[in-house]
Image (cartoon, rainbow, N blue to C red; front, top):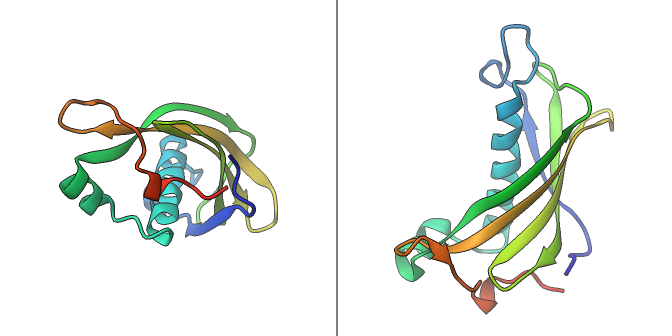
Amino acid sequence: MSEAAPFTWMVRVYWEDTDAGGVVYHASYLRFLERARTEWLRARGVDQIGLKRERGLAFLVRDMQLDFRHPALLDDELAITLTVTQCRAASILFAQTVVRADGICLVQANVRVACVDMQRMRPAPIPEDLLPSP
């Protein structure tokens, strides 16, 4: 199941995102990707705190594949995109990219998140009202 247009969230690189040389530290990309998925959910009206409190569910990363193609540097403006490429009963697969303002793709990622019953820490079906539209 794929959504028509990718969702995009913008971020600027700050000192806290970089190593001593001003190059984005590899773990910072994970935060950028996570924040874009969070903002995608928020744009769809999903309150993650409410989801956990009211339904006992949360989305947790199950699998991630990253291809670091070019480095981002201090003060770069980045577009973090995501597209839903697959939706299963209890997981969603996202294709995500990190693209610099000049159009150069810095990182390509495939991220699978699982819907988890937080009490049992087991996969749970994604509620129908949270499923991405076809």
